[in-house]
Length: 137
Picture 1: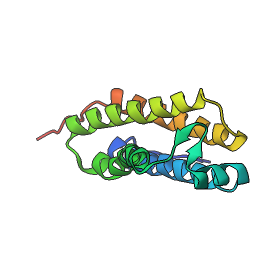
Picture 2: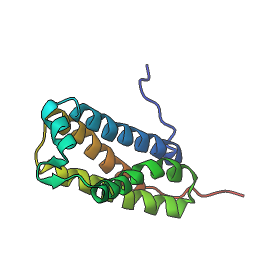
Picture 3: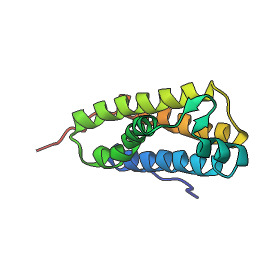
């Protein structure tokens, strides 16, 4: 009995991995707002010594746009660009997440981070090992 089946088509798998990664980012942030001390800190505009300003939020909006745009790009880019963009986007998002884990966090943050980092590493692995299929005429 098969439990998991994949046709090996990375162009079909990568967008789903980016969706999975993005959903984990969002849910982690939503869960964080359920903790009173973090909600109060966000409302005060000072979280762990970081000032929550419009510029700060813009930087993180740009960072969050990376996995969101990769949902579409990883489906439609040409092979060479697809491979390159997935490697670069995977390195950026995974590095940022790995860095933030070193700063500590809540139990749920560490839990989500495990899946986010693993998914990012998996995306990088799939992109690095991706070989273009030869088209026979």
